[in-house]
Amino acid sequence: MTAAGENQAPARKISVFGREFTMPRSRGLRIAIGFILVFFGLLGFLPILGFWMIPLGLLVLSYEFASVRRQRRRFVVWWEPQRRRFAAWRERRRRPN
Image (cartoon, rainbow, N blue to C red; front, top):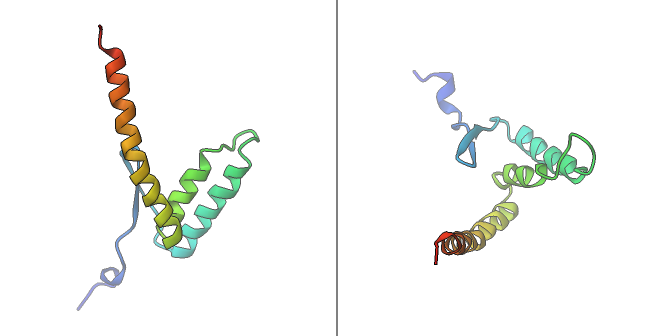
């Protein structure tokens, strides 16, 4: 006999700045949350809403759509050398001459 919960896929998690957030199990709800975050992020000039919602919404959508996932991975590949170069520049700048 198997339990009813064994057939479900494990909950997906998003890691943002070292913290993990569990996403809903429903694919439709994840897609809706992603689109809502992007839409309200576009209204970021209004009070309470912010442009920070756009990348968060795209991150949620990247778990559902291959095209968004490809763009996210391309950005990560581009960003990592930039981050390392900036860290090295900052370290050189801090050292006394």
